[in-house]
Length: 102
Image 1 (spheres, rainbow, N blue to C red):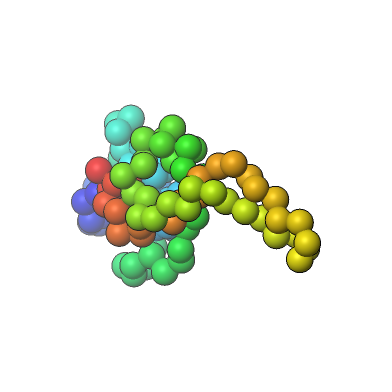
Image 2 (image 1 turned 90 degrees about the vertical axis):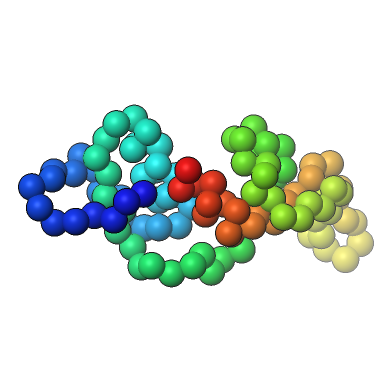
């Protein structure tokens, strides 16, 4: 997204926050033709994001997953681990950031 400069331009939408949700909202709104401003610190993502692999594939974001655990297991106590039967992935902050800016 281009930088916002002061002047006579009027914004249709201002999104506060440059995390994944803010970037996605700003990018999709701009694709719809809205004049969008995005406000937030110019810092890299610092959090790690984990997702169900099938859900990220459905969103067209499988290219942003940097590691997948095929057999997800949940431990609620020491005796009976529960197999979820779904793959879980760690999202690449860099790849997700680049994808959301497209």
